[in-house]
Image (cartoon, rainbow, N blue to C red; front, side, top):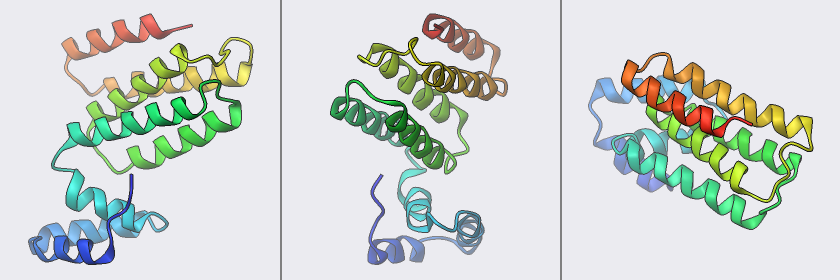
Length: 154
């Protein structure tokens, strides 16, 4: 995700109501390093969660296309990035969609998952985070996602 320029952020801040502006500033205080990215999300992307999730999935696709045989270091970097941008959203559907997409891409890639215990643990860690996220969703959605998780399990 590319951060908007200061001018674009300023234009977006001007349009906010005082209560929304206060919420944005409080969130900004929580994420000190990533202020511009968080403001970009709050001002321009949070209204289109599906688009946001799709852009994250596209970024994952791009990373896997650059390194089809990803190493542990590359996967850790991608997971760190994914965790960082998923902190911005409070929508569990977005988190589930992105994490499952990562698992699908990793499983379909040329990366030898089973040959490295570290990669297996990273993969299973993502599935575990998806299971934790679905606890707060409707039972039908839980069953559907759980079925997909079972298909992805090693």
